[in-house]
Image 1: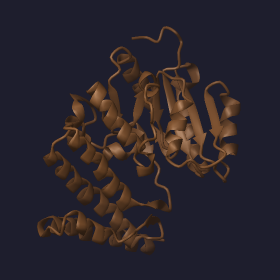
Image 2 (image 1 turned 180 degrees about the horizontal axis):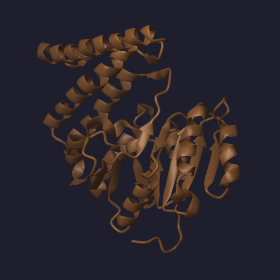
Image 3 (image 1 turned 90 degrees about the horizontal axis):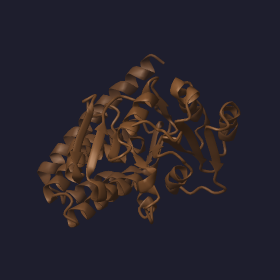
Image 4 (image 1 turned 90 degrees about the vertical axis):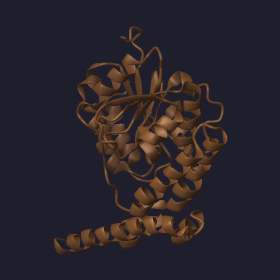
Length: 319
């Protein structure tokens, strides 16, 4: 379906804070694509969460080149994860796509996203961008939350996977009801699936996430054990997912996600400064000291720690 009314189809909504260098690279990867330069189908929206670095200087460089295609807003005070809603609210496109400030677009990414949007302008299903994480490199269609969690697991927590149709966004009464959990988009996605059911997962590789130094600054166990578990339990209580799927998913995030990032924090604390508040004790307690579950977790954790130690030794050797 063509966009006959010359409306903006895609708003790339970037919440940012003190990442001027990375934002520069991200913006360059978008504005250099032909479909951005030669059409009015795409706009960029930047919501600056009161940065103290050169963010405004970087943005102004691009504003001077594309004043009608880039919108910049700077919050007077930091609003934490509520900045996600702020960024989305500033978009005028038919589809609003969250974009990390560290997310470089591949050369053909925008054409692929626009094609997917144009193809689904009538039915407006949920679009989920898994960026090759599933190693499918194709589109997968399904219905309901069971399908989504079984297919993508905890990748719902990455904001780059999230987008929402403008028509759906304006109907949401309290977008930030779970912003204190630091998983705002996960909560909204779960709510949307209850209403819309139909999901298209696009597993094509569209983006290149940039690794930043000093990753962290938050309590990773609180967000990905306590808070994620809380949102999943809500779905069990409302019969959207089974109790068995809940435990399967929590095993996955503990063994395949938390074990990796805790190992990085333990071994390379100079570059991974997560807040660690008795993480192992809390995981032990979550599993109610189930020896089999804990054996599997510590096996993953030790293996990952050894891997991180080897990487660190090699980097010092060749430094």
